[in-house]
Length: 90
Image (cartoon, rainbow, N blue to C red; front, side):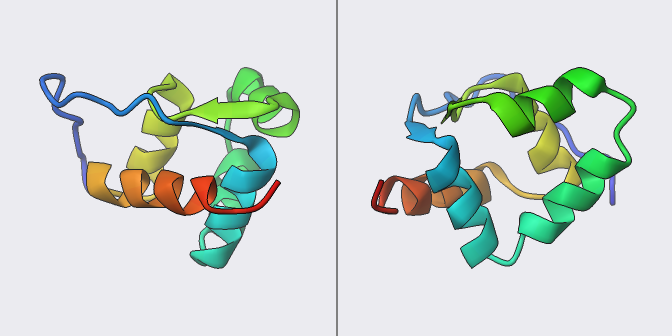
């Protein structure tokens, strides 16, 4: 994965979804196993705790930005995932 940087001048949407919605959207997009692999290799216990315990996910959360970099996702990709997640019934 190439070195990528998020542009600080780009406004992040403040969309919030439940963890179930977010994980379902990742699964539907074929990304869930990749996220699990990244988390399994992470040296940061807090990220693993957040992944397993957070009840909701905000688009502007730093762990979301970090995972996007790890998965080589663009801002538009992440926005699309959040939009898809918002459409998952709870």
